Amino acid sequence: MDENILIKKGVDVQLEIESLAFGGMGVAHLNDIVTFVKNAIPGQRVTARITKKRSSYLEARSLEVLNESPYEVEIQCEHFSACGGCSFQNLDY
Image 1 (tube, one colour):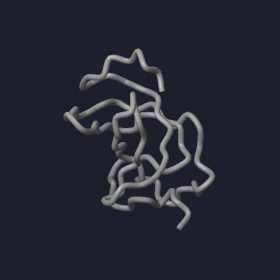
Image 2 (image 1 turned 90 degrees about the vertical axis):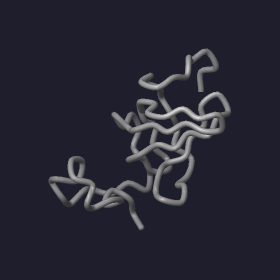
Image 3 (image 1 turned 120 degrees about the horizontal axis):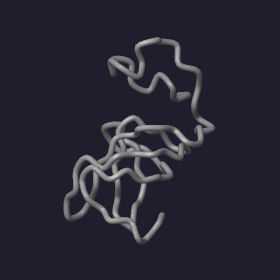
Image 4 (image 1 turned 120 degrees about the vertical axis):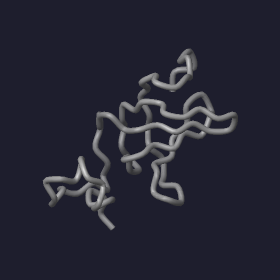
């Protein structure tokens, strides 16, 4: 990612989701800092907003999917993006 990004809470960044962490957050790296991204799956490129900054990691929330994942499937529930009750419905498993 861009090494010139000022990392602080509320900043929007573009991230490549590499894997899933225990608990279901997507894992990416921003300036070599592990970044856990809510509502993101491996293979996606997303615009995300940093929601938490700690000394050893960041947390962010996916705002927009720029590139879909090869593991992504069609969502069956019309409330998927709003309620969170059907997590990973968009992930082929």
